[in-house]
Image (cartoon, rainbow, N blue to C red; front, top):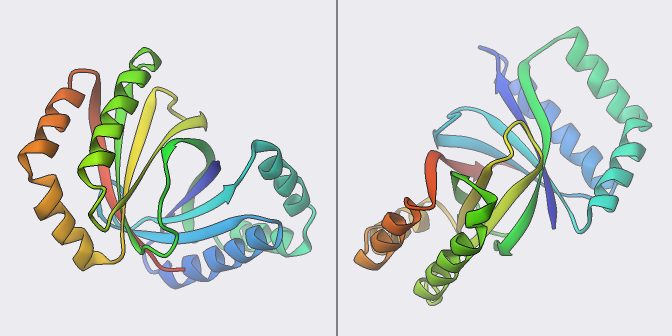
Length: 205
């Protein structure tokens, strides 16, 4: 699975414009075959940013959709509106691929933790993810890990913990994140990679 991410950093007083445009963008992406999600960063790195995610089964599906989208009059109008009345600084799209796990589509809150990781340590990292998967198998959390395909930084792996809502996220941190078993895995993970950013995102569309 491949996922593109666009980040909008709203200008002061422009959040309503940004939300209207991101919903238009998500609609265009969906019409061309993507499974889309709009999220707001509610805590951590980039708090206040708006993320637009588009998911495709294959890279070819994503590139084909992108070609079609570029010729879509609605997309051309959106780009014109953005050019004539800028409302945010835009980063992306950047493209990532999943390498382990899957997320529950109906979950509304996700915690993303990004590590600097050399590819030579990938096998060990996946082994630790398997440990975490076993640890949380009876808990209401789903986990996925992804790595960049086309991005500003390529030496990373992002682990995403997905929860039904904000309350479930808080309970999950208390019950799982603070457990001795999970903290042991975190300590060992620090030997093969460096956690350098974390954020919590909440679905808004």
